Length: 245
Image (tube, rainbow, N blue to C red; front, side, top):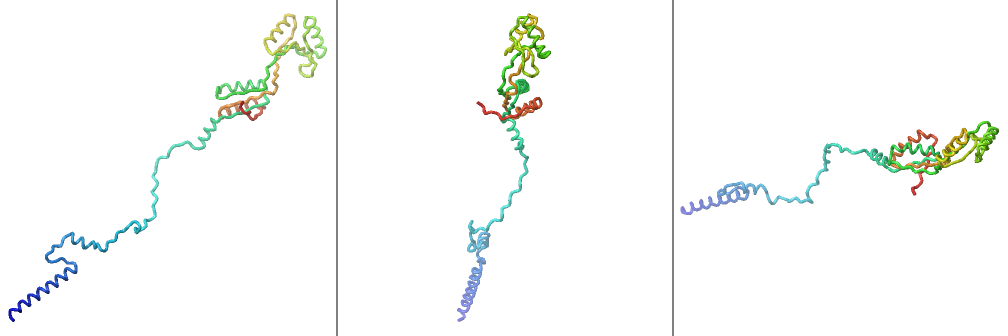
């Protein structure tokens, strides 16, 4: 029996060693023949069986969006809307009309418009040609007119009329009415050769107040001319422009 006793203790020691080794391996310790290294330690620390892949659906909701701070920049220069509108209105075509004008009024409007050149156009209507009246002015009433008539007859002038209508020319002697001033001057020269005195030429405005003037062009030019006309012809009346054509 003495031979089996050392063998018994050897087997007992071996079993104890195996039990200790199994316990160490089961608890995650390195085996005595293993050198603990970084890969093994990292693998144990990762605990792969506990890792869960987070997808977009399971991702936590993002916090409220924060608006970016405004970036300072140089202001862009641009004309104001009122200035743009004013510029458009200044170039917009417009028309102003004046009525109840005489021929002299129309001539004055034409003179005032000359500095604006082609920027404005004038359209006049109702202007009748001026006539030229050759006459001897009244003096001495009815008796004076009768005496002048007798003097004309003695000079060989029979083509005359004594004006009878009431007014500033009543009892004047009318010797002829002409549309051409040159023709009126020729008659005066003939009468003077016959020693007829006090003969005059009176220009007669046949238009009266029947004339009308329309002014067309850009708003700024028409407005400037309108102010100038108003300053000279205060009694002129504004009117609506007629449709072109």
